[in-house]
Amino acid sequence: MTFSLNHIAISVQDVNQSIDFYKKVFQLQEIENTASNSKTRWLSFDDGRQLHLIPRPELKVVTNKAVHFALSTPHFEAFITHLNNLDIAYSDWKNTPNKDYIRKDGILQVYFQDPDGYWIEVNNQV
Image (cartoon, rainbow, N blue to C red):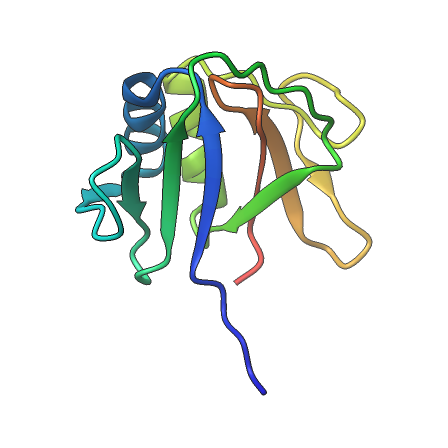
């Protein structure tokens, strides 16, 4: 058997705010929700994988940095500049503000949160 990642689904309080955030930060494209007529909205990465944003206005996300999803880019330094231009705070694993972290294997990474408090890692592993 083989598997590949199809999509990530997260619950969000304000789906419009989350759509704007993910489009602005990662330049994702909104695609049609082909599964239902719900208010869940879908975004697509360049490789066809998807992020599904499920509206749950009453939900308050409580999580920690160990619970995150990670995205990779070969344009890590440009992405850091992009975060700075958007005034999005990021940190290393130890919560040092505006600092990246070099893992033991040499991969650079940063962490930041979306509007609902979900942790996102971006690294330069390609």
